[in-house]
Image (tube, rainbow, N blue to C red):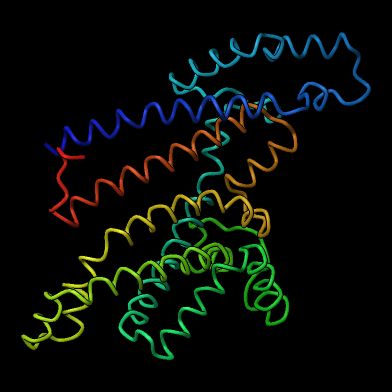
Length: 317
């Protein structure tokens, strides 16, 4: 039954990915600008521009360009970078490590901040603790990540000289060195999502804490920690898990700005540089990969629903 459900979910994702591919391609190609002009510069003649466009396939009708690109994607070929003169898959692979590291670390920080904050706020409903936590969460939602990043640089890098202001060191250089470069970007990226998840955790926990089975568990003399973690949090976790899944996908997209602020050579910086150079193939490939990650994360969240809550029935969805 689980396999059937899994197969159905994957099948429903295919049209979504196709729509994403179409929109991705059209947005890039209908935007004003000519990569041939960018490559050859303002001194290029019309003949040189025409020859380069023909070489790049840009002289073909747009539907043929899309069809050729889609066939390549289906065969695992995202094209060749016009400016880097290398396969797009290779360019993405070279930049994916920093983005994955940044996103995972930001997600860990998000969960470590959000869940305790939301649970404590729910347990202390109406108290000064609850009000304080929710004000902090509201501030976290209101403040943009790049502003947090710039202030962290001012405080921790320039004033206190504790951390490097920008740059990247891979994990192979040592965990401490890696974290020293990644902790500020991860915090600035994860704060907003932590605030959202904390508010969702508080809301879900409040609904569950008023249920009769929670009162029964407390009447049996179970420790408060057991009641919260084993009975309340487990039953309140599905909406929280949904937000965590969405936040993880959002962090991947948000990494574009954070990587630019902290000069991290990840997918975000690759996209920004490609947009500035109008490198069609790289932009299309990276956006498609990010969108596919978004879709697959949501699929993984759907799968986890049934594991966390057995009441979820595969055949009724």
